[in-house]
Length: 272
Ligand code: KIV
Image (cartoon, rainbow, N blue to C red; front, side):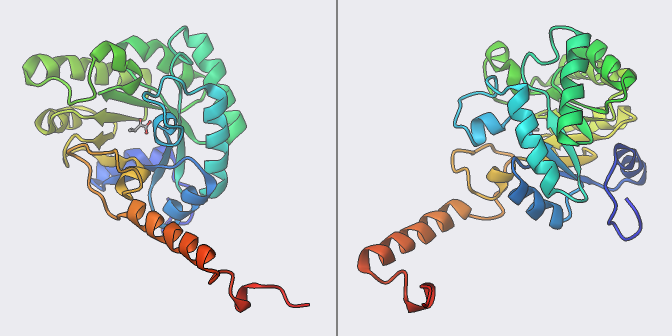
């Protein structure tokens, strides 16, 4: 980022932010319109999450997201975002089969969207894929703690384990990602004290969601923080607006006016 804050945020800025103790702000977006709004609001990074499958497409899990879908959403988000770093999620099974397949899929994502980085879920098990991507010149954000693509394995969407055992496993995963070359790591639903210890023990920035304020940054799903997705009720979530109610109110006023013959009024019609 330059002094005036106008040039595109890069992965190197993330490292500088951690060193300077300046919190990193990330939010999801799935389209150009919302991307341009959150970009203008000054976020540092926009995550094109595979949560698009649950938030926009109404699926129960993120597993159905495909590389082509992520490329479509990544491309339109990148078009709307002028300053924020755009990070695109790699969907389920696009990086787990082999590092070579991960490189092919992530390469397509970067080439066809113009985004600056990809994100993938998992710890030590995906480190070989992360290393292959970084070697190919593709910046990678990791994601540990609650990993939605493994929902059928972990069995619930809640916070991940507590205690020294949980910390030791998490720190092994985070170090494996760091050593493989990841530039940052999402810590999802990790107990705050553990997230704080992991953040202190890691040289790359941690971006928390439901993991307390001691991470190096925070990420939220845009539709949840705007109150557009009323099904979102996680304890960590703060709603900064009540847009679902506003949408219902606006559309019901429109319907009411159409039915009463009030809309369109004389000011809304073309004159000959
Ligand atoms: O897909 C997504 O939106 C995410 C965030 C919840 C971090 O992975």
